[in-house]
Length: 217
Image (cartoon, rainbow, N blue to C red; front, side, top):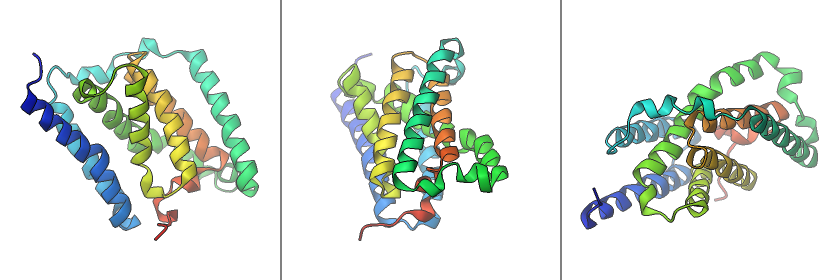
């Protein structure tokens, strides 16, 4: 059924509040100790909105496993590793593979927990919720994916890092493409988990720790 003018206005208000207003408020005003509690509430609200989305079925989240392209994931992993190593060597070479060297048990814990506590919630909010509930408001094709990546980068504003902004924007392009073009939520989750795990293993994990964030004011 075509969206009415009032329903589009309501969806636009939701979209702006959820993807622009809330991330900026969290970044500007919340202390690091409260950021993840706020993000948990952000995720919970997103799940409610997704459940209210017409024609959305939760089984959608477990479809698309067959669309996962093993060689593509492997190539992405190698490119991500090369990029991460290059960045660490250019900025803080002493951190290269620091967790693997000094705290291997912590690295294993991160690799086991990160996909469930970080990747999965982010992917639900920025892929199914974004594209299924609000996608019709936005231009189609790559323009929509670029907007998705930009907002995915914005939600990481709380780290106050240009490097994090760039990395999450590039990652958002890949994850959004996997979801929207390949029609595979599982592939988006796998790619995100692979990218994040490599970042932590290579020595970039400190940039993604809220306690290390320094506001520029």
